[in-house]
Every structure is written in structure tokens, then in C-alpha cells.
Length: 266
Image 1 (cartoon, rainbow, N blue to C red):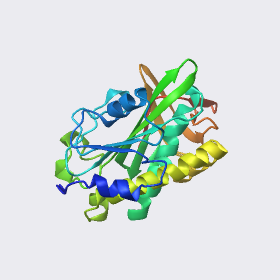
Image 2 (tube, one colour):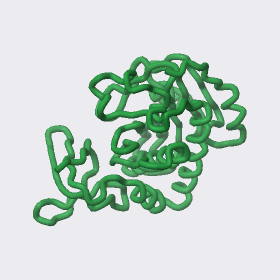
Image 3 (cartoon, rainbow, N blue to C red):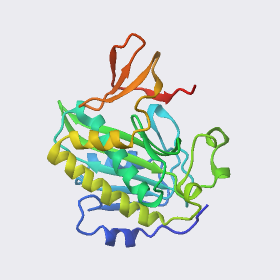
């Protein structure tokens, strides 16, 4: 693994004048960058506040999964937003974040970067990034959105938990190079800000177009698990709210708003 020290001061200087990264908090170790960012949200931190950590002791993914978070090698970042949107629109932020991450990774790994609904970025079908979006709601309005992004940067195959070695990858594995985490953090903040501004200005339509352009799921048969329910069908895209559209065996279109989707082989 890359044990180079993360230069947070240099990154802060590069982000000067930006909205995303207007305040940058770096920690050698936290339980979860999302938990820290949510605390800052409660304390009134401004939109664009970024929390970065070298290591997480309780990194989390969707559905309470553990996100492997060793020190010195990956990117663990949470971004605080305060958009004037309804809670039902928050999943669109997750899809927007995926597009931003995929664009950033494509600058360094031009081939094979794709998106899997709702929150995974993959390279050649193997997971390289997960996104966890969490809300603070006041009444019927969104008070704050925290977007947690974990990117596998310089992990070798042997560094992964054996359970994930066949399904996960890292940027260094895909490019056979070691990458600067500060450079990646800067590029991510830059792409994220561009897409967030587009989302606020133009709504979900351009995000949906960008997501579909990078989707690996269109036309594929998938299985979606949500709690005790399982649904299967062929992916027909996502709708104008970000829900997954499945064509079932009878040709009917089903709208899926939550769940864990996997592409079926064969």
C-alpha cells in the first residue's frame, strides 16, 4: 500500500475559492467520515464542507455493510450539501455523485469505467467506489445531505478482504500505477462541484443523461433485493426521478426505488 502522508494543506490551497472544499477537515483516523460530516451539519457548517480521513475504523456502505478502510492508500471523503430539495429527491444526489466519480476516474482509467444502480462505480464490472448518501430532515424539507464516497486507489489485490478479491478492484490495479490521493481528491471535488451546479441549475435531466451514458445495466437481466423482497427483470433504464425501471416476464415496467441490484449471468 501507498503509505505516503496525505497533504491536506496543499489540497486546501488548491481548493481555495471553490464551493466544494470551502472548508476542509482532515483526520488521520475517524470512525466514519459521514458521521463526522453529519455532526458538522448539526453544528451549522456551510455547504461544501469536506471531511477527509486517512483511515476509517467503522466505514459504512449501503444497507449497513462494512466499507474496508485501511490507512495510507484510499480516498474516504464526505461532502456536506444543503440543497433546496424534497427528501424524495435525495436519491438523485447519489446518482449525480456516481457520474462525478466516474468522470474523475475516466481521466486516469479511460476504459471500462461504468455505473451500477444505485451507488456503485465499477471498472470492468468490479467495484472501485461506493457512495453512501445520508440526510438531515427538518419538517418536510432537507436540512442537509452528506455524500460519503469511498474510492479504492492504491490497494493491491492481496490487500482486499478475501471475500471481495473477485468483485473489487482499485485504480492502481487497473492502471498498474500508484496515484496521488491529493490529486484524486482535488479532481473529485472539481467534478462534483460542476455536476452539483448543473443539478441545481437544470434539475435531474442532465444527470440522468450522464448516468445512462455510463450505465453497465441497460438491457441486462438483474435481480434486486430489498429487505425480504426479490424482483427480477431486464433493465429499461432509470426514470425522471432516478428509480430503476425493470421489464418483467410479462412485459410490464416495474419502478424500483430502493434495493441492491446485481446483474445475472447467463
